Length: 302
Image 1 (cartoon, rainbow, N blue to C red):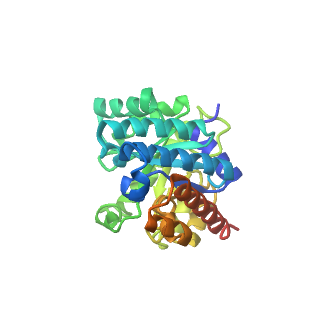
Image 2 (cartoon, rainbow, N blue to C red; image 1 turned 60 degrees about the horizontal axis):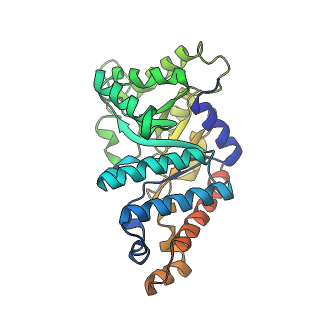
């Protein structure tokens, strides 16, 4: 039996390291296209569906990341779109990462884990926040025995990560290093469950916006797959991504750089300006950006 992180590792080696972020805010879709649908939520679902189909067609990515906040912001209709988007991602044959960043304890954490690893919101991999304590991880890692997987926040891509993650501890090292040690411990425990695994079912979120930690973190966690945010619109560097993708490997997320690619496509932007753009137009621009991102990332891989 393979867990979902190992399946993602294999997909990344087959289709490349790009993770297409479906963090689809209605504002990313031109107003002239939104008007062609009965609601913004319906337009978001149509856009997501078109992108998933085109990414699958082109073989430009190994996985999708669906950020739940954008769907929660659209209310009940938005959550229906979230559930359908996750379903479509999983049906595509690629891996679905649900970016939910939960981080609670005890029965609350168990309820969150059940909500996203079973039922209507069932997904392949989730993101979780360990900074309330490592007991927040147990309800999630219990599901790893059933093949599920998770990405734990280690070093994120936002400037504010220095406020907590980079703080030095009295006994030496930083807060994030303690998280890394816990990830290595969990990996050691899973070896009995998954004898032939090539990576841990518990990966780490490591941003590519700062070069200083990339080599150290990659060497410290050779068996842990990285989810790498910060590439594209956040200014992350593909060269740093290449370092983080060594050893167990990693997938590099791009959201706005793909979802808003039509803004940098002169032909499509002109259609938007005169109000004639269609969903097909902006989805094809997104597909072209996905192909270009994959090419850029692979150009730095040794």
